[in-house]
Image: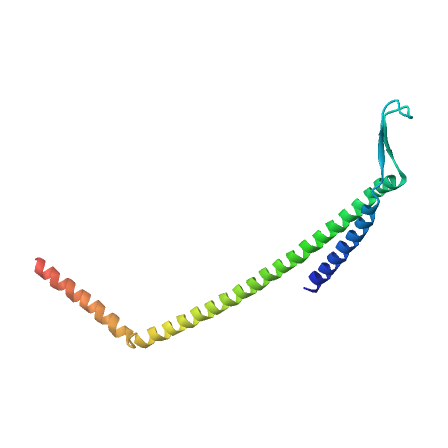
Length: 149
């Protein structure tokens, strides 16, 4: 956030700087004259005074500098926005990991409780139940076989 505030301060300074420098150039625009082919010059062209020539010659450097400043500002702004978005995703990822851990712990606890409940309700003498099941199966088979004959 500090980087963003510093960036905004720089932006304000650059705007004020450009405003005052452009205002100074706007006061004296310069003059030019278009000459015809036979008017005091052997060729057709455009004639500028010293102020207009200076403005034209310095415009490239001024425009390039302003463009570089604007590009740097936009890059810094994108960097701050990207960092913020990445931090938000990191926070979301950590929150989802915590949520996953809590759900997993809850499910493990539920599984343990179901195991305990199942052990409490299952018969203690399993061999008796197995023997009774086998004996009733044999008895049922014998009865059915006798009925069929």
